Length: 597
Image (cartoon, rainbow, N blue to C red; front, side):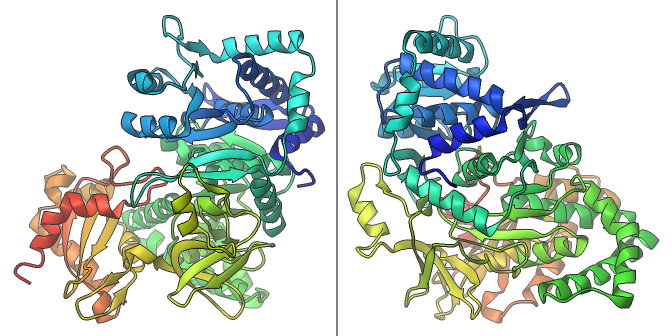
């Protein structure tokens, strides 16, 4: 990035982009284009509108919405005005919303619709700093202290006419050391903390990411990750600076269909989407059976051989190249079409990606570049490169980033992207960053001889059995989740003689299996207790155990027919399992697996 602040980057790209397409916005089954010029008009009116409300530099502006165009425009407008954006997950419950808005002392909150407005309205009396609510959609009439987005833009146009040059002067005031955003962590281990990052932090991370992973001007992304999460937000910043095209998914539930319609060249996702695609492909192969199944497995053998050569940076030639061309024609091209068929590569972050899934997709011709980072280091620490990758690792450090491994295995990070502080929590800040600037990540990992970083587990999640064996539960959980009948898994056993697990069944797959095997029951919760299902799953778990050392094996488990969800509190918005929540909820079932041990 040639600019020193994000607000200047946005203004310069808007000017450079002109009538080129910046966004593709879903509408009535199609995607309508929005140009850089149109974006510029909208965000200037919105920024001036916020200034007309009397906001001062560094005042806090929250956004409570799903991923959509208006979220991005509100974010840019707040950045242009020198305000501090506070993203809020739309899945958050009212008490969580109240905590974030009160802790950050928000002055204005953008809400998506009536449902999100109701959350704020119900807690407004406990938010003395909140002056105005702006609705993206819905009727603001009769709602005290609430205006619509069109009203805000109209006010902005009037304010600009009455105060020419006010926004430009504000832009010139903003410096790299100024606060850009407060992102609240998802709280997997306790109350969320507000991570304060500055313009300079994000200027560095955007520049460094675009050095590591090249994004072509005009390349299309499908934007669907929560923008309240640092990875989804960084994706938006990267695509804007690279002058790529962001196409918004219609809904998180339609991402699979939208991929085929939008046909992106690059996608950023958490591992769950890739895991589901992997499971769907295997399920379809089993359903087809016969000759199609045999051809698929032949093609996969060829694809894996090609993948291994590419991983070793060897040219694919001769008879293998001919076999791969046939596998492409018969199998791979058809499967890739389900994801749009134009992928140059995809990026995975936010949680560990199983090497089995990465290698499987690579054999199909879809390269997944896994990366790693934290909100506290502006999202990215390391990432695999397009021409330099190792599955099972999160790649090499970004340019300008230092990584070292502490004596106890914890990953330490230092660089210009390390956050400023936890908002209003100096003690937690001192615990996170030492006097020499090293960020304590809380993750355990190792660096190989070539500089590739491998994450083995969360420091706090390591299970120590009563026999003194250290087990990284995520490794075992990933193996379980690779099974097509498993949706989620949590491995348990700290200070116990052996490991146990809670396994949630994939409803669609287990119901289909029951139908094929003459079991009349269709309720996944009841199927989880069916003797034939239990027998079938025991065989599959036994097969997974054979890949593990004896102390890593799951000796006993509980099958559950209802999945973990955000709504019931077991998952974060990026679909990571909240271990403490699950263990508390199902603790009696887990304890029962140990009997009198």
